Structures are given as C-alpha cells and as structure tokens.
Length: 283
Image 1 (tube, rainbow, N blue to C red):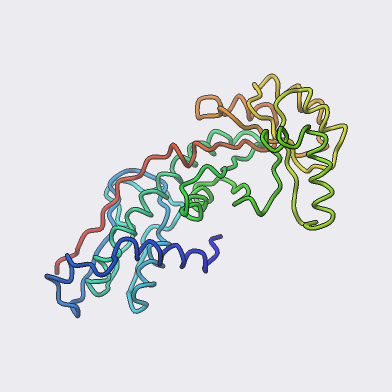
Image 2 (image 1 turned 180 degrees about the horizontal axis):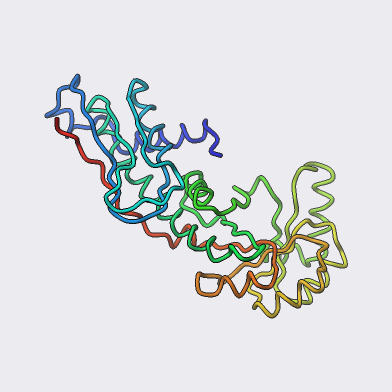
C-alpha cells in the first residue's frame, strides 16, 4: 500500500511543477466560482490503475469535490468505458487534469504489462518481482502499479534490504568477505534487514551455500539450465531469484525451473502509457 504522507509530498511537488504561479489558461476565461463535471474515458483496453490516486489528487486541491468511480484499480477496462466522474469547481478539474492523466496513463501501462507477465506465471510457483529501475521521484506510483497488476514489490530502496550486487562484491574484495561483513553489520545495527547476494557463476553459488548467512540468492544472467543446476546445489536452503534478460518470450522457461522469484525491470521501464482522456460534461 502507498504511504499516505509520501503520496501527498509527490502530489504537491507535481502540482507545483505544473501550476507554478497560476493556471493562467483557466484563470483568463473561467469564472473562479463556476462548477463543472468531467469523466475519465478509457480509450484503450487495459488493466486500469490510478483511480484512487486520481481521487486523492483532486481532493488534495479541494476536499469538497464529488468523485464517483465506476471501475476500480486492477480491473480490466475496455475502450469506451468510463472510469470515473468528478463534480468540482472547473478550476480544480482543469488544474489537476494533466497530473491525473499522466499518472493514470503511466500506472495503467505498467499494470497492464505486469498482468501479462503474471499471467504467464500462473501455472508455476515463481512470483514476479519489480526492481529499482524506476523513474526518479515516481517510484512510489510505479511500484503501486506493479502491485495493482498482480506483481510483487521487491525492496523499495537502498534502505529496506541488503542486496550485495556485483559492484559491492568487487569493491569489497570477494563474495565471502562481503557476506560476512553484511551479516556482522545486520547483527550489530539492523537485525530486521534481510540479506540477498548476487551470484554470477555456479562457483559463486557453491561459495554462498557453504558460507550461509544470507536469506536469498540471486542467480544473475543464468540460463534456465544453469538455474536448474544452481537450485540443486541450493537444495531449498535459501530463497532464490532469477534475474537478467528475462522477458515475456522466455519467462516461462525460467519459471519451469522452480525458482522462487523472477525479477524483471522491463515491467516498469518498458511499459507504454495507456490512452485515457478527461472530458468535460456539458449539461
């Protein structure tokens, strides 16, 4: 779930970026007291995401608005569907329009692509994870869209899990040293943190299994056959994650191995925005 205070900070910053010292296009020709209605029209089949966010955006500007949603987040919507209607001061509708559309178009694109990946995994135990390959300052909403689409959120940032990747290991000097130092750090300072370590070879996997002290082993850029070999060595002692070069065409070949998690940055950075429009209702 989205942390409310963080969402408000994001909305306030985005509105400030867009409105600046005033929505002069609206100020010049719309009476400040005029009321209006608008609808959000779906123009492309999708898994809809961002309806609750849209309501929060409008309410942040004016908490007296009337917002009626007809399609909830995570629901498959078809072109021509009406997602919601809003009744509010016209100034509020127009000033929030672009932020609402940008947010929902982006989130719906991610949710739709995530759903496609998740659907491929239905026959298998593997769960789809997102990554930190996100748009700066929009991670909150991008990861929420992944969740809405049926995916699982991995760590949100650098602070909520220890992940020893290739550069950490190379700078530290060895995979053994990095693991032992991380385990000592967790014991002394942050016992709540989980430790994941990236492995690049079968030999790395053997080293990690012999050392222990981690919660999850990432199998980075392993082929499905290599993952099968690695899983036999790990023998269920640690959680496992396949990562690197995974897409819609090959994800099932990874899932069939029995790996616990499959991480894929593409569900966010390769998603395409969905066509939506906010239309004035003229009575």
